[in-house]
Length: 252
Ligand code: BGC
Image (cartoon, rainbow, N blue to C red; front, side):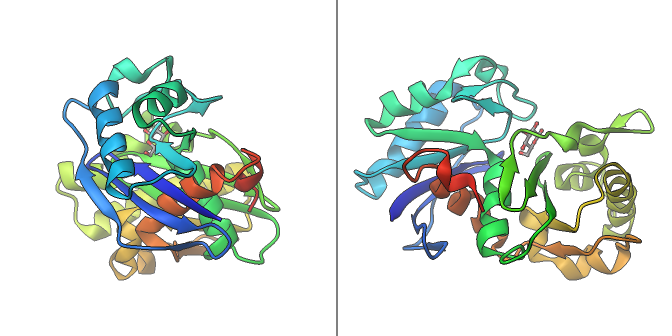
């Protein structure tokens, strides 16, 4: 079925119609910069503009860069704090006049990768980690998502992992790729020790440049690969989540 997927990120809000059986975009992505400050009303207005751009009348899935439980956004580490405790599903549904489903951005990306990307046909525990403004995580066991895992906030040596090892941290602290890769390696060793996944998939913007950091990453027991769907994973996963009956689509 065709569903409009919209991915809310720290710098841009991107949308495209998705063929949810094939896991592919049906047209060009449309991107609008994330409003600053990223308060609910201007963000909902951008979501409406994306729906209007595609003259979309069908179901819509939207990702959010924080914990989302039952349509309510519970945390906002990298967006305006006004999102905390807000009924985002209601906000977007009213803004667009469409049925909207909302889920965590990394969960969306993880489900899409598990079904159509590097995890395709693979059993066991897949851990997706997205490196962008923050670090997002998704845990998928035999195709079933465990939502809202938030492993980007694990503390290592007294520091939150995403403050040291996100792509934003790399830019902010002007780290060389080697130095940043070293921090990512430390972080991955820690999550490998805690979770023993069968595969770790690295997503976010950095997945387009694997040669810069992947040669420095080695885990004793877990293959580490970059996302096959790259930056489209969030859009595709958002669309999967909105396939009726809602919730069924987040099985990989
Ligand atoms: C948020 C997560 C989100 C990740 C990536 C973190 O700061 O807590 O919910 O998935 O950033 O956007």
